[in-house]
Image (tube, rainbow, N blue to C red; front, side):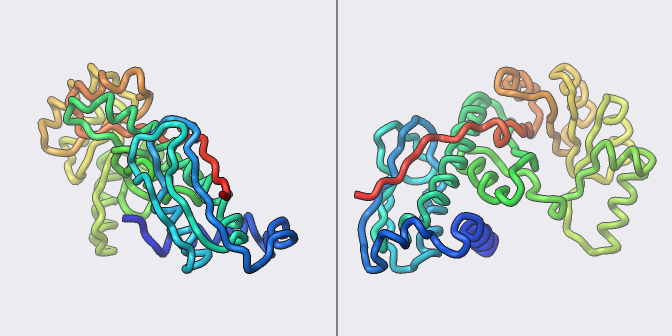
Length: 281
């Protein structure tokens, strides 16, 4: 479920960016009392995302607006479909138009891209994760779009998991020290956080297995063959994740290894927005 407080903050910031001291185009030529109806038209095939967010945007601007959805988040869409209609003050509908379109176009592009990846590995046990490679201040909705497309959200930020990556390990003095310090930190601060550690070689995996103290091991830029070797060493004792250099054309090879998770930044940063439009009728 979306965090409504964070969503409200995002919407408020977006309105400030787009509207600032007023929609002078609408205010100059449309009566404050004028009411009407608008529809959201689909102009491209894909997987729809952002309908619930659109409802929230309109009602955030004016609680009296009537929002009638015809298609739900996660549905497959085609050109010509109508996602929803909204009824209310025309000035408010136009004030919300660009924020709703930009949000839904971006989210639908991500959910469409995610669904392609999910379908590609649907016959394997491996689950698909997103990453923190997101647009600043829009992560909340980009990760929601991944979820709508069938993927899973990895950590949301730097605060909800300890992930020991190469820079942490090298700066700390090695794998054993990094793991020990992370566990000490959790105890001192009484945090309920899981620990994931990045490995860059089979030797790293061996060292992690000797040290223990983690919840998940990431295989960074491993080949499928190397992952198979690493999984035998892990032997189901920890969750496993493959990351780095994985894309649509090779993801099935990685899923076939039996790794628990595959994280793909391209779900978000390579997604192309879906074409939508909103028309007053």
